[in-house]
Length: 148
Image 1 (cartoon, one colour):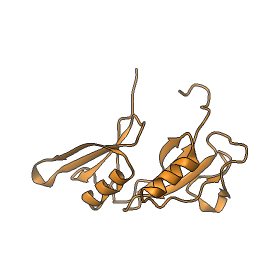
Image 2 (tube, one colour):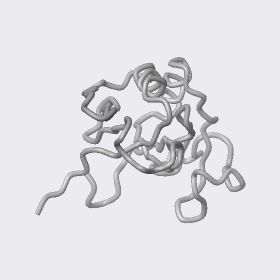
Image 3 (cartoon, helix red, strand yellow):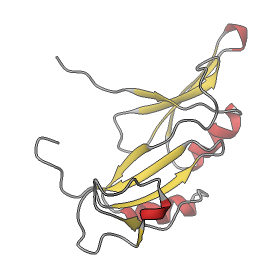
Image 4 (cartoon, one colour):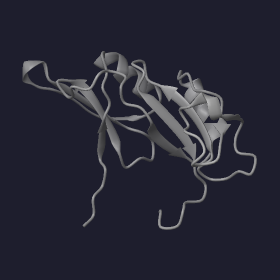
């Protein structure tokens, strides 16, 4: 049985501010639907992604900014970081650490710069949306066995 993750809910406090942030990142706006009773849902898809994010009013009971560790896989972390910064995101410097020995959101175990061996899954950068929902960039150039 195939199952595909299609959408992740991102809790925000200001829908229009979040919409502008993700639009400025260059993400595709898929929908902005207003319903009755103050309901509104907005959906964006990062470039090249099969999974989208949705946010709005009446969409979730999660606290704005509580979604953490949203992972964006990239081929070239330095180029992606540069583009996101140029688009207005406040992205950390690139850092690295061996998988299993650190968590990318824990600054106490980050080593500066990209992985010196160029290893997949080892180089990261982080940023947050205006509400503090946390995103992790991870460079993957060679997938683990079984992954496409």
